[in-house]
Length: 203
Ligand code: HEC
Image (tube, rainbow, N blue to C red; front, top):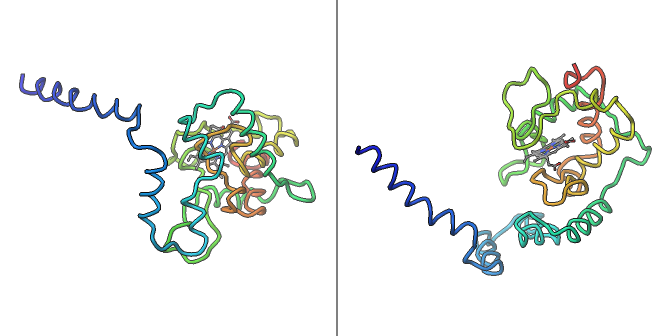
């Protein structure tokens, strides 16, 4: 009996919070002002990381559910940022891609300049042998194999890694190339990790 009461109380408490989330009471400009105030001294390059670009702003405005016209506009704008490797080869070294995918270091205040990890496993299954992975994104097991290792699919995948929103506006997948978080060589290695027939992703 006591247990039931407790659960009922929880339900009552939880309800207003959920509703508050649906309709934010604080306007975006106020939120922006206070977010900035939390970072009075940003190291070089950090200003950009706490400033919305046009795409992030519109994704927030529509809570990631864009009307069709906006969806197409964002997709076109993001696609225009994608730079494929100059020689057209999007496939690097899958073994290096394997370790970059599984490396979550880099990008914090206290990190010295380093080659960042991609942390793909935070959201995706890739190599079957890696048991620790998130499920926010779809499983990428057999990714290249399922696409018959087609070169145009590999190019599309490189572009997806470069800028996820060029494919899916308001995606929660980071825009790795757009933000300069990963290098061209790293993105080629990651594409090879997904597309090389020898890669464990395709075994
Ligand atoms: C924060 C979570 C997150 C991280 C980190 C992340 N992704 Fe994603 N990814 C997603 C989500 C969510 C989707 C599905 C929506 C979309 O397509 O954007 C996705 C989709 C994809 C797709 C397309 C899948 C399909 O259905 O064809 C590929 C390829 C991909 N991710 C590769 C990667 C690679 C490679 C990395 C690491 C460099 C990575 N992702 C890191 C969340 C993430």
